[in-house]
Length: 98
Image 1: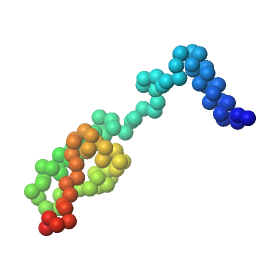
Image 2 (image 1 turned 180 degrees about the vertical axis):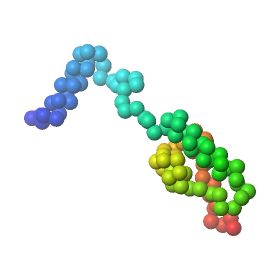
Image 3 (image 1 turned 90 degrees about the vertical axis):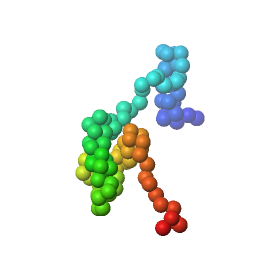
Image 4 (image 1 turned 120 degrees about the horizontal axis):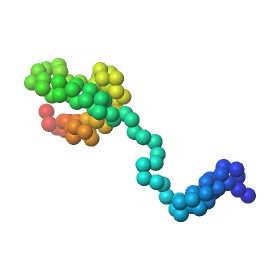
């Protein structure tokens, strides 16, 4: 016995196969990503550039959480922009490097 949810899914696949000849997704279908807009990228870039230009000054370090608060962009988006658009990664010290 097939439940109603399974029957709907099968009906959808049969209809799609009949109309398009395939059950594969079409290019461009799905939810659009809207968090990495040029406006958000520019805001993060300006903030990060300001931090990098003050590297020799103590107390100018900012975390991704602080940058997110200042720009109004979520922290996960800030991390994604810093990594993917700016190709910057966190500099860490190894435990025995003191």
